[in-house]
Image (cartoon, rainbow, N blue to C red):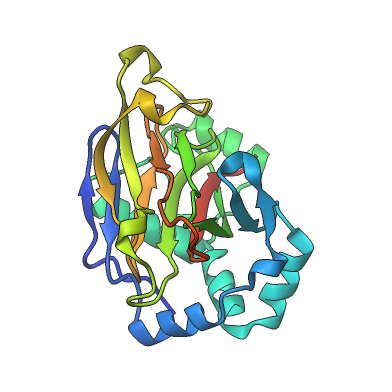
Length: 251
């Protein structure tokens, strides 16, 4: 089970963000959809737009048990957690003129002492260090669910948002797309520490519609403002399901 970046296209302003569709083999995608975790094991986080989350941070026991007991997701989890996955994403970004300075992660085992020696020799001057991954199952209700404009936390380097919805399952009239924003006031452009902002303070530059078998990938920057506007499925029980993969700096 792998992601296909052959159809990935980027915009570069005000921050690098791209879309790949289809992201994976259609049959594999359907199987993952059918095995998506049930709502009852998610944690509800009202302060994040009535978001439901299942991850290493939210309901971690249920998350671990679900992964362990579901072969398809266990296989995908193992791959996403691997250095090979990170290297593939880094190489894909480099092929789109986005070199973040990270060296291949596979086989890296430098101790602190060895890193100091290499730094003194000038061999690691452009290497920010090691990366790791985590992923989150998340859902937003079509009836008013949203994510306020934000730029992501400083430890994040790359984010990949994978839509988890079947063909003809989602009503496009509900919204649910990922908005690329720019602060209307230039003084609010710099947001490395990820304060949230109000929708009215942002100008929408582009919206990536919520569609099946799609991956949105972007690089965390000081102005990587993105959001999901309040959805308009009043009375609907539909849920905007996603898999969010974060590639982060190690502490």
